[in-house]
Length: 339
Image (cartoon, rainbow, N blue to C red):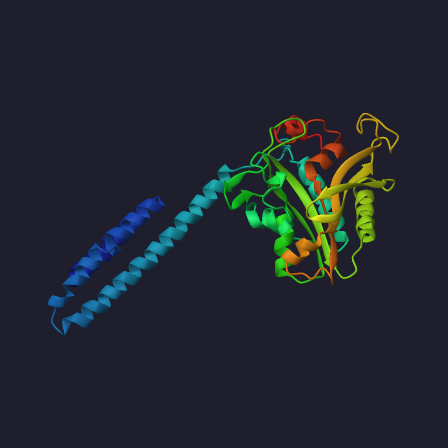
């Protein structure tokens, strides 16, 4: 057995001296040190040795194993070094060749406008809140004071998954969830994707984006809402922008209003963009309905609040003078690279 071990040592050393690749090195390692390798086979026969021979052969076997492992490691390092050197010699860089100009991407116009809106409200101390796009009927309608017989619940306007679950038609459910989980003061905006069963045309899409805002605290008034919207309009559309409120009806706010801004193109004088009216409608707003506060566990005798919501697509179309909403979703690079 002693002769076998010495023979394994000599034969392995001889084979290692002639290898030229990592694969050959691995083959030798498996041949001699693997589970079915020659050294392992010899060690399995040690049980037949006498008590005097076993420690002598065991020590020699360990020496042979250590010798082979050192040789294998040295051969591996030498091969890696040779490969690295050869690769460096091959990968010569010609620094005189002109560089390749990489085309840089740009923000989508919707992302541009959405980020600007977020920045305006974050600057006024608002936090961003998010919620599920697949929403329970309760949060999307009932908690917002929209009863079962309301026209907004018609299947022609809403995508129903089942009787109690819908694709959210607005981001208002996020406001309800926040009011349920957090006590006033509350000051949030809720940006996100919403869904309505509309046919696709120049001004409608079944998928679009909204940003809704909510403030609930003691002593909140309509004046606070108007002041907030004035700051928002001037920040987004220019310092000379004016706003106009027109009475309207929303089930979840009372009183409610549609909010217009003076045309950013003509300054309110009348042009093609505002269709000669001088004003462009951008959002709906109002004081949070007492019933909505009650549904969320907030006492309307103590707290009041205002809410507003605007469409990101409509705002982007106005900002960039886009006359067809479908252009925002067709991903035509020739169109998108203009922004």
